[in-house]
Length: 184
Image (cartoon, rainbow, N blue to C red; front, side, top):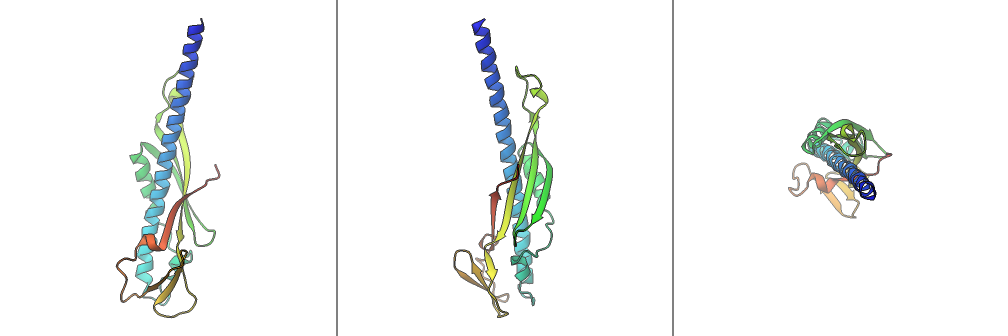
């Protein structure tokens, strides 16, 4: 009888481990999906900044939270979720505070936890939520001088001349992407 009890406890612990592994897989898929959406949007914002660098606005709107809505960011989240054996159950875009834009992605694993001594686990799928944020690293220096002068969070200053763009200027230099805490 004691051996049977020990076996039951061992299988129950194994079931808890399976559920934990499923939850970790779902969280990894959610993190990857949210980061993919944010990185896709960062690329879109950078392209818009470069396009508008020669206009009267000089691309300032892209650095102050007045960018265009994300075109394909949530589709990228869906693609990454699928690549991680999960389904994207929602991609919510939020602007603010300030110039930040965030992407909150909810995923559900395609595989259930599986059969175990704990009844009902064969139909339970893990869910997870992750949020990634895109924030400008630089802000326009006051004034309408050309070229556009940017002051970055690391203290450096960048001059953006639309006639002679620095080939080393890239999306990562102007916009940060990071995971952020969720409400769940």
